Amino acid sequence: MSVKRGREGLRQILDTVEFPVDQPTMVVLAQEAGADEELLSALQAIPRAVYNEPNEILRSVPVQDRPHSHTESARTRERHEQAREPSAIEEELGQNPEA
Image 1: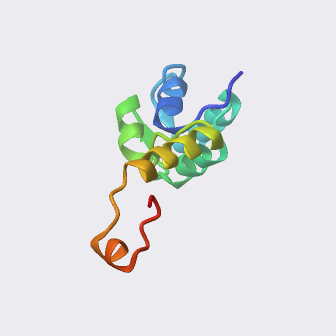
Image 2: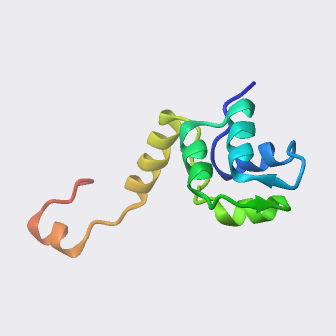
């Protein structure tokens, strides 16, 4: 079983859930399905209600899709830094990190 992360992980979990489902049961099902701590916390934060369909939960859960590893995050950060233009102040002060 792989760890479920972000919105895509939530969708995978919701594909296995029988609706309607209440919030406490949803948290337990997500835990059993391998949701990571961020996703479990997000599910714990949604209103304690009965949800009739997956989209109700997707709209309620404040979770974003994120890179799956620190390495992937570092690569994304590097790409952004390489593409970044130096500000006018950096250029004037000679603090252009790419110079």
